[in-house]
Image 1 (cartoon, rainbow, N blue to C red):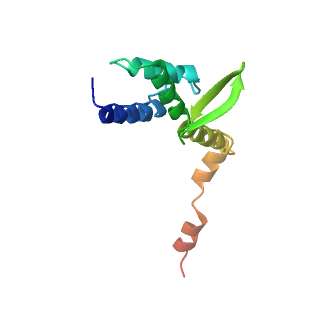
Image 2 (spheres, rainbow, N blue to C red):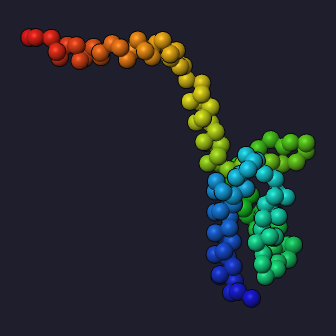
Image 3 (cartoon, rainbow, N blue to C red):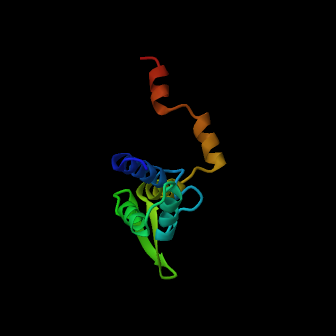
Length: 122
């Protein structure tokens, strides 16, 4: 059996991986406590008690980078702060006004005003 300090270090590494883009939100934008329990149980290669796995899962869900969302069908859902920020930025960009193709073409045909002023003889 590995020393406790080594297991603690592995637990932090696992939590960071689960919170990252290749972790619990790799295929779905949300996850449940059950998903976290399963991930910690699968990682316990030397075995672990149910209490230990539940404790690690609850500590993970309490991390600053994990956000509790509105329950769905009575089950608590979570996501990561990084993913929510990325999604929010994408929505903001999608809502920005866009130039029509004709407006883009007209804008590219005209030289900028500053350029015209510089080119005029003094």
